[in-house]
Image 1 (cartoon, rainbow over the protein chains, first blue to last red):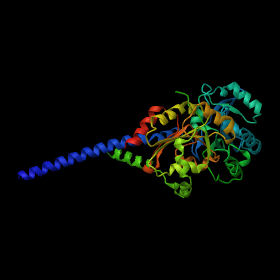
Image 2 (cartoon, rainbow over the protein chains, first blue to last red; image 1 turned 135 degrees about the vertical axis):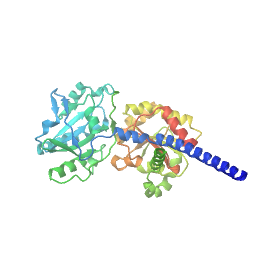
Image 3 (cartoon, rainbow over the protein chains, first blue to last red; image 1 turned 45 degrees about the horizontal axis):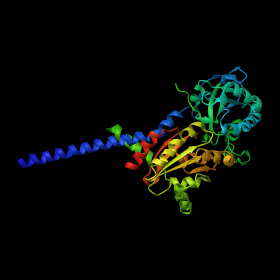
Image 4 (spheres, each protein chain N blue to C red; image 1 turned 120 degrees about the vertical axis):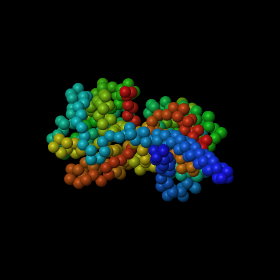
Length: 227
Length: 184
C-alpha cells in the first residue's frame, strides 16, 4: 500500500513535470510564431482588391483641378489604373510606356487613369504643383489624380509605385482582371519580353480571359500617412 | 492550448520555407568560393545575378544572413542603412553576414551607386542585383513580399529558419531577431 502511494506520487509528479514542460514549450513556441509572423503582418497590409473583385467608385482631383470619378468611365470597356508618382525611378522609367499604353488602348475603350498616393510631406517631388508640372512636361495623355487621403490606394491594395490594376466595365460595374507590373524589364524598354498589361488588355478586348493575372515587381513603397 | 498548438504548427510551416532551391545546387559549388569572400569584401559594389542570392538561400553553412533590399533613391532604405552597419560591427565575431542588395538600375552603377557607397562609407558588402524581371524571383525571397522597398530577409538556411520584413527596421528589431537566430 505504501509502495502504491509512492508510485502514485511518482506518477503525479512525473505528469506535473510533463505538463510544465509542455506549457513552457508552447509558450516559447508561441513567442517564436509571433516573431515569425512579421511577414504575415505585411500581408495584411497588402490586402485589397483581388482578381474578380468589384471596385468601389472613387472621386479624386486631377492635375487640371477637375474632379474625376471612376463612374465617369462607365461608357468605356474598362480602364488601366496606374498607381504612380513623381519621385520614384521605377515610376519614371515607365512613364513613356504608360503614355504608349494610353495611346494604344485609350481609343479602343481602355484608357489609362494614373493615381498618385504619395505623401508630399515625405517626398517634396510629389506636391500637387510638381504633379501638374510633370504632367505638362511629359505630355500625359491621361488624368493624373492625387489620392491625398490614400484611401483609394488602400482600397486597391496598392503597395508600391508603379502598381497597375486593369479593370473591365460591365454596365458601370468595374471588375479587377489584372494586378501587377507593366512588363518584365523596368530598366530597358528594348529588353522587354513579357508585356503583361498589353497582353491582358489585348485579351480582354478580344473577349478572352487574361492569362497572367498577377505579377510582382520592385517598386517604391507607398509610405502611409500616420493615422 | 489548441490555439498554441496551431500557432506552433504555423511557425513551423512558416519557417520550413520551400526548398525549391535545389535546382541551382550545381552553381552553388562553383560560386561558394566567391561567397566566403563576402565578409572580407571591400566597400565596392558587386553586380550579381540571381544565383548569387540563391547560393545564400540554399547555403548549408550554419550562418545567419541578413539580406537587406534597398536602393539609393529610397529614403526609408537609406535611413535604416546605419542599423545594418551596426549589425556588421556588433556581430563581427558571430556567424552573421549582412549583404546590402541594391535594386538600383545597372546604368546608375558608376554615377550613383558606387559614389553613394563611398560617401556613406558602407562596410557591409553591397551587391547590385541585375535581374530586371523581378516577378521571376521576388517570391523566392519571400512569398509575402509585394516588391516594395525596403525589405529585409533574415535567414539561416541550414536551420530552415527565416523572418521577412517589408518595412524599414530599427536596430532593436534586428538585434532581437538575431538573438533568436543565434541563441536557439
